[in-house]
Image (tube, rainbow, N blue to C red; front, top):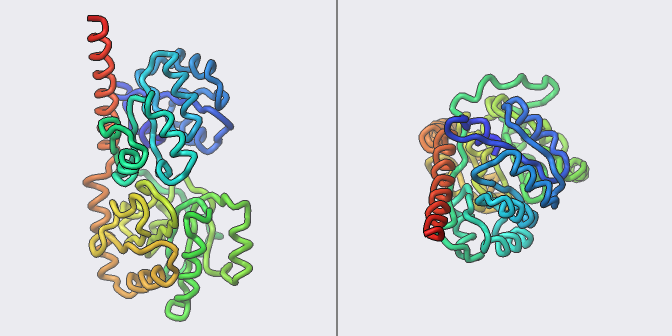
Length: 347
């Protein structure tokens, strides 16, 4: 969403933001330099939302959320505005998302998802009409600017495996650390660098310490720009255990030209072509991940080939310009359909 707002042009796509719920300081910090107008309202405040929509006068309301989208869509309807839902990776695997999408499918004008895998779930499991589901894959800016300096206290290995994901059980970082530990006899200085917020409130670090894995990794916390860390990495791993949409972190690693290992969940298989852009493994398998890391680190030429293929893939198919263009096309189709329907009623 932030990338869409950053790349939009007032003459093509004008964005405003309504934050419904608690304060999100990280999001506000990212959008304020963009000059995007924004307003915060209560998470279920239909009247306040309707007023915000009246103030901003949007052509489309684009919602991101779970069950609360029902209230947001209702507010948009009261203001007479078409509604689109950003259907995220959990739409078919988390019960609250399934309930939300099942309830709102009768009232919305469209769904946008970033992977064909999630689109299939929406159409096949939740029975959303195929014409309402649009796949728009994530896009990156080719020129992302100068990356920030690295913290001198961060310890990198030789080699270094990078993982960019918020720390939580479903992301599989503990599996990565166990794989790194199992390879220390072959690669004594191997180290994982974990980038992302710790959503376990410190439990991850305690668990790692309890099983002797504290010296296998460095944790940087959340970074708005991860390029400097990726540039220091030899390999990127996303060991997700349950679900993924189309991971931006994999795209960022490919853009940086480093080889990628990912688990075969969700839309990861749409990015990693085994033997061409990386290695795809089954989730929750320490031995399989260790074997894939060993294969990569033992074959520098293969790593270079995978890295270059990934970079070319991002530059040709996953640009921010293409993402904005496809959003505009979907929004225009929805508006044209609404206008045509209104003309038929008036006639």
